[in-house]
Length: 305
Image (cartoon, rainbow, N blue to C red; front, side, top):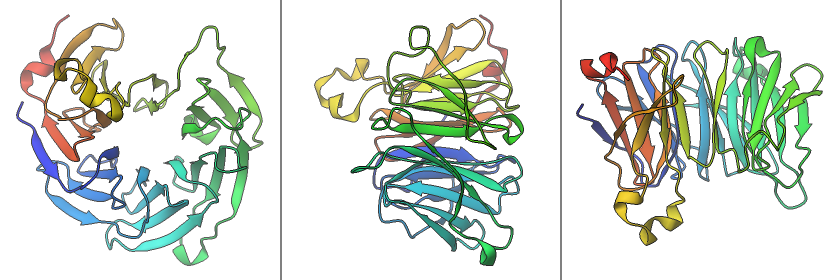
């Protein structure tokens, strides 16, 4: 399995997202410029210029026409994928950490960091069909009960009925997307003990995966496989042996919870992972500024544990 190396970012990668058809890959990094790549050959197709801070997260609409990005410059921006033009900028008073389109792309959930006196919050925005009609009003704002703790990720539950969030307080919460009522939260005795750094949904929205303290997790839409990356802070890299540096993407069987194998290659911790929706390739983004695109060999599909 020879990776395709994609060098388009000058700073560490933060997030990767495929479109629904699996032919486009969007990457976000700390260099302010989200980038679009062809997912089969790794060729750079476009860049989205306009942010003034690290871009933490992105999502693409079902028809691949709109892109939404969340950034440390305290904005979340809507883009036209094809023309690379900015359609709208949602302004906040703290950095926008995560973004997620609803099923049908009529709504978006955006999380903001705690900043100065402000607590971390989840904002639901209405996405207008015509960019001329777009406004910045929130349909719903959910404050984090653990005020000063950051919400790292919020995603829509099945059929947009709920919102699932997780963050620094190590508690997963499920909210009612209509009323904003807190429906369920994980017990601290049973659940995670450390910051929830990543949250990823299965292809059919039936279950999701959380990562602690790994930097990135992704689920295969084809097989019962999970890929995990990171696990080490970039600041600790120089003080550890490269063999113990966790610079590889590790594959596990989702049911048996056993490690299947690993893919090495990055020169720093892995910050972002994504499976192609067809399950036949995956990409990883690292602290080294590279996106590595891997197309699986036929052996991968015949792994027996």
